Image 1 (spheres, helix red, strand yellow):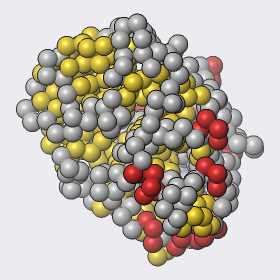
Image 2: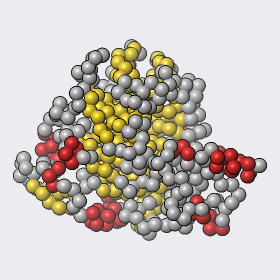
Image 3: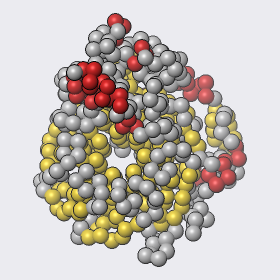
Image 4: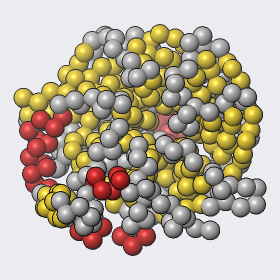
Length: 470
């Protein structure tokens, strides 16, 4: 029977190893035993759902085949069954460095989406178990369960006033909930699975994408009425986001393009759209910096790209690419409140925190036992929330991840290995062409693309008109 399961799994693109453990893996199956040159099914080349691996043993790394030296330290921690216990994750070879985490348990299946709400005091999550949950961020206790979807819930987002939650799922429904009472305020039926949803900055509008019509829909939140429907892509839209000024909407797609639509000039016959290309695989996610100067995109090609959409410098210099941080497809990305950091999550089970100003990796967070589906910063930049899917292997062994994890990165700059990595990256001083004051850039950065210091760039209004394709 086991061999039949393995044979069927292999024929369907899934790798399930049962009862084949080697001694170094303490009863678990080690991928390193069958990987002589990296993963047998490389992630980020084919669809990520074709890959199912068991965690490797302590002596091996799941996507390398053996322990590899890396500039980016990885995290390990000792998990516990107590959902309210504060765990500590320790840096390898750095006994003085500690990062506190909290594991939130309650969902019965994969957790697909998560974000902070109520000024970081609460957390909202959406799951394959057909529910949304509201959590207390300080204790890890779940406060409310929202039931109404008839299938997997793929996405959720809270409005800026923390009065409403929007969610979408495989049942093709977009639902807006009263966050306090848990009642459904209104719902809309889409032509396909709802892949993403996002409130505007003032909470008046809601945008969602679906997988079959290659379109996004913009809704009036109070009335529950459709305002506009945009068809800008040639394949499934994976992510949609309002810009902080809410005049623009960014969308990413399986057609490997990112598009920014100007909603102020949009009509049925005419719209101004900026098209960004550069990724070589499906683009899974996008996020704006709060000042709307930068846009980040994450892809199944394992890279994150940063686009300077305020100055249009990408037209001559291209985007800044953050690579070699993940060994698997990037599932999500999120800027910190001040735009100095970016966090990305991946199907390689890790999160990576990036130093945006110096264009380098700060460190990697490792603790989930399966794909990390989503991630987000708290507004005070002290915490990162992440969520994970449930592995088919873990379903068979009743050891599913299906957790959310809070990572306390408040003191991350003081971690010795981060300081050493920053030292190795190296900075150099250049002079601002506007105010004349010196500022630092990374050694590898092109001075021509950094003419102004961050303060002068912030004072300049973002001019999109010259950057849009008509």
